[in-house]
Structure formats: structure tokens, C-alpha cells
Length: 120
Image 1 (cartoon, helix red, strand yellow):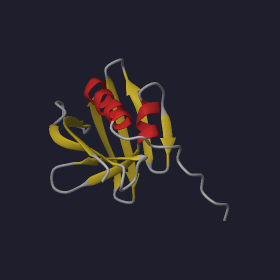
Image 2 (cartoon, rainbow, N blue to C red; image 1 turned 45 degrees about the vertical axis):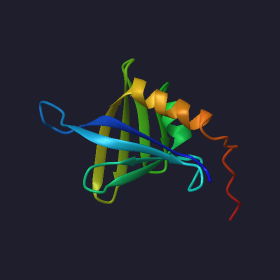
Image 3 (cartoon, one colour; image 1 turned 60 degrees about the horizontal axis):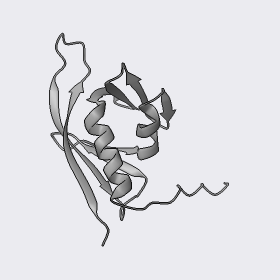
């Protein structure tokens, strides 16, 4: 049985509002489900599946993969942007809790490199 690592955090929803609303989120890493993916669960049942490597690289420099864009915002925050048919959603995290969680995903489970996709 593989461990599921969970962490409660807070995210700021980036909107046109003067003060960014803060919402509780759950960060989850389940090696049995997908050892390379971090799930971010928002109130109301919305869940994002973001590659762990994308979050880690985004802490240092802007990166983009599939529908996600991730970049550092100053020295203490990380922005994650999701593009979908419904529009663009943007959330901002404090980096420190996210870094602690990502470290736990490495110590809590041994995962190998992501398998390369077979040529079509």
C-alpha cells in the first residue's frame, strides 16, 4: 500500500477584486494513482492535476506544460494558471508551505522518472 500525502494550504484566487479572496485547498500526492502528479482540491469539488515537476520548476522560473503555466511571484509566492475552454483560472500560493509539501512527496515515496510517451 502506497502512502497518500495530504497537506492543507491556502490559496489566493487572482481576480479583479481589490483584495484577493483566500480559499482553503488540499494538496494531495498519491503514488498509487500517479506518482508524478499533485492534486489540488478546491472548495466546491474542483480539482486540478498538476505535474509535480512543473510545480518544482515553477518555483524558480516560468514554465508551461499542457494547460498549466507556473511561475514565481517575487521570492515568497508561486502562481499557477490553468487555461481551459471555460476560461483562465489563476491562483497564488505562498511558496514555503508548497515547498514543504513537495519535499514530503519525495521523502514519502520513491518515484522514478516519468515514462516517455510512445511515438504515435
